[in-house]
Length: 251
Image (tube, rainbow, N blue to C red; front, side, top):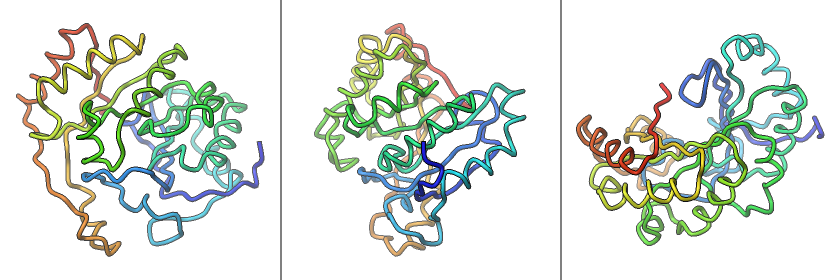
């Protein structure tokens, strides 16, 4: 573990309650191999400092995090690595995880699942909780929506399932995109078969990050989708539960 290693950070979001149990700090890391059409953090596409992205060292992050450890301890919270795709900066992530592992702080990750498992297995071994997306179960539609197919992602989820850790599969839930009964059924079956402790969280589409596209000069990539209704969410949850997979919400 090298505290002098530096990486690109978008934000350290303290007192986060949507990214795991308890009070947490979410570390938003720059860099992502996907180009999801609904991305709310398009600043993560740029591996350079700008209005949204700054360089920080492990030591600087440790000093910042140390101010909040009392809140983690009493709320059973901790850190969540997010992005972008945290594994895109593999060495930087590894050094952070090793540092906070030594401090005994609970660590979670929010990942697209798009990485080479052999490059990150040692990192995942030290994490306590894993969020991983299945954006669409159909590989061709996944490529159309996110820029890459999902075969590698599904294989990595199988590997994650063998770690015997708490895992939540997240579906960015978008009306008329991935909310069909067939897609939800296929995803639920896959989770039941491959992730022993797996639960599913549905994340309804929102457009809160759309203003960033114009500010970054990439307004042509901005897309508008439809947010599902409460009835749509209930229907999908009922399908998931019918395959003996628990649904969960962090909010």
